[in-house]
Image (cartoon, rainbow, N blue to C red; front, side, top):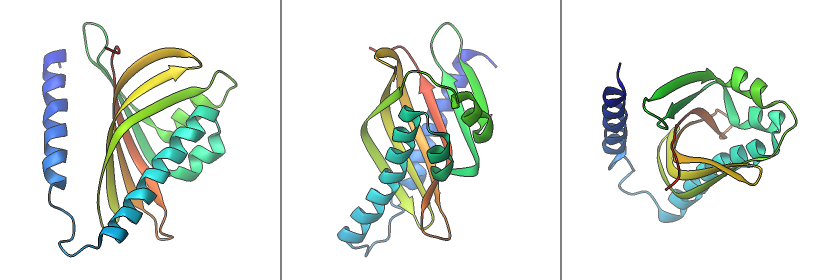
Length: 162
């Protein structure tokens, strides 16, 4: 599959996921309850990002569903490269000492319905003090039986920062 086709597929997926969540909220949902649930979803994402920065495998395992997948879409260079990684494998790659992995997100958009949620956001990624890349994250979360939001998947693009 060529780079142009992958970009078209990515854009179609983004458009469909956005449309799929439009208007999914409960009509009579209270603002306070909505804001609280939105904050709980964002807290799970922030916990993930803080644990990533500290390279704390145990904290990452607490916020990731055991079967979570991470999908990277590297848009840098002449071709698009996609990689699907099970969270256990991804966690093993992070389990060494090194500089902090700092991901700063900007204007996250949260959508949820019942026991599923999505967070879409732009981000900037640094390894230590050095800017590595920018892109967009799409976090998919599910609500556990205990009421905790767990990350079931993260799909992210990697591109040169403008």
